[in-house]
Image (cartoon, rainbow, N blue to C red; front, side):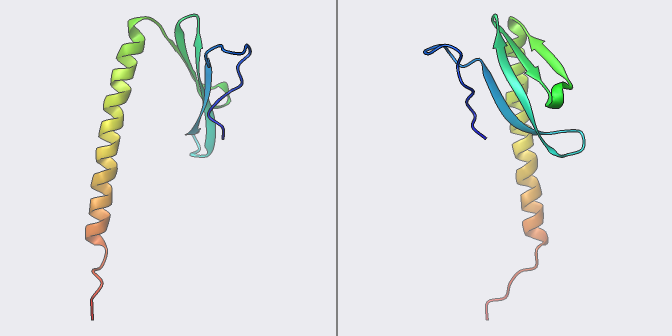
Length: 93
């Protein structure tokens, strides 16, 4: 999927991004992140779930998302390490 959406006016900044995500049924879906009049809008798959961030809410959300990403990366690394430990060792004969 192209991560860029056509601009309505040449030279205007991009104001909308499509992002792959998973829906409630763990099926591939698309959510939208957009900018409208200085606010950030996030719209879930099939327009279920919507929220708008204004002013300092944007910075607080960004910080929370960055921290959540760090924890998710640590979780994945721990899971991969556990899987590597549990795999049978191949013998070198």
